[in-house]
Length: 290
Image (cartoon, rainbow, N blue to C red):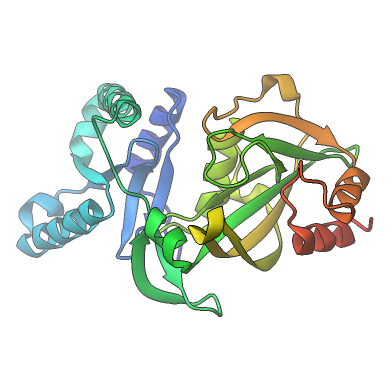
């Protein structure tokens, strides 16, 4: 269940966002809610009241949560409320710089983390198990992803061309934005994350409309890549200038608006230039009454 951030956590979140960071609040990591998370830098931030320093049981609980986050590839910073009261700007600036250095380290291979997925059963229920992304696609484990369709007032759909570096369907036209749920991540956290990471669009959870869920299966690379996933499909209505999008280079090569009829014709003729989510396209166009 979603828990409202404390005033101190909300003030820090606002300060970090003003510095250009993507910040998630009250993220359920599968154990407890984390006050704030910098997902790109893999940093959890716990904003602590006085009892966190004086109550031995609270200290032990904090240690347990920190170890749990470490197992997921996140490091945790604990910040007392009183420090934020006296130096909010300084704390935010230091966190922003640390986050930037860590992200740069990821890019250069000096910092590493292994993305994990929550494993589901064939009905889409959590099993309680987690595995690295590469192992999931090697073994064909069921997992969850989000698919986001962006539609403008003219009724056009935004599609993206997948980067040549993608491990599946490189250089093919695909959904507006999509991505897997990392372990402990909720669907709504993922839709906000993916549209921001891939396209540079800031949106609120309330902006998205859930449409349906598709069970998708595919085998690629001669059986070396097996993708069994439940795709939660969402729609968001936005009028965007394509030239002003910030595309994530390693994920997205380009983006464009198309009429839904073009999408229909693409899957009817099995156009190899498109990722053919046939069941999803059919349901989407049915929803749009095409």
